[in-house]
Length: 343
Image 1 (cartoon, one colour):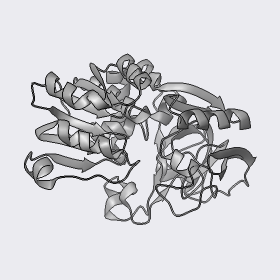
Image 2 (spheres, helix red, strand yellow; image 1 turned 90 degrees about the vertical axis):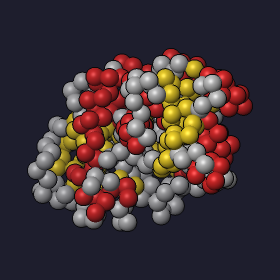
Image 3 (cartoon, helix red, strand yellow; image 1 turned 90 degrees about the horizontal axis):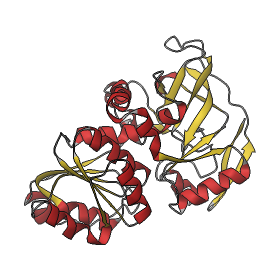
């Protein structure tokens, strides 16, 4: 099978990989769309954020969608021809976390594109348990970005209990943050987008943000906008240390923060002043619960709108060497929103 391979720091290629065999509980999916994510760049930099394998050991890509073209002998919930998106987490299926729909927390979890072959290829062999049926109203492109991007942000909004008329700040409006803008706006919130890049703030406005602030001006801007109270909720999507600090500065007392970004991985938090003194809720966000998928699709179709949701996709590339190299480079340079590979 033809697929992407990481061959060195900031170096990618398209090569022929051996075709994996199909086990009884797996399906073979013909990939129709596979999206790039910021965490893919950790492999690009040769410093994977998850997984135990070295970069280049498997095909990357943890946001794919396609059509099932073969099913294992023990698979009865899917059939040839089914349109599916793929959850990036494969758990043991037996532990408490797997049983409550969170295989991402399983101690035996394997992550698509990090621990096993991902979706940046012509085909993918994956456990049937990772497949998610796609409604007819959704394209393969939208289905791919509705997993780790829109689906993840939908879950974040649920975790911090975003409701109509809440003020919600999204810090870092790359593809994940833009997904947050879509979700928060569809829930009826007043949305504030914050980023270092003016081009990304422009994208946030297109997707429905009510206010935008350059990062350096955000604290003062939010203070004026809220008469000093702060916002009800913050979704921090960059992971940069200054951005995490900003989240604690702009959230109001009794407010909620969802942490998605992991870029820096470190932040200094004043426990008394920023957590106890404000009685805030600070929660890590890492993917949606498997049983939320149908709810996520319904939310996208009925609340966000499929055409509006697809606006987070700015670039589409074929699975060809020069195109793939350009895609990773532009994505790394923050010159794109969501990028899709179409084999």
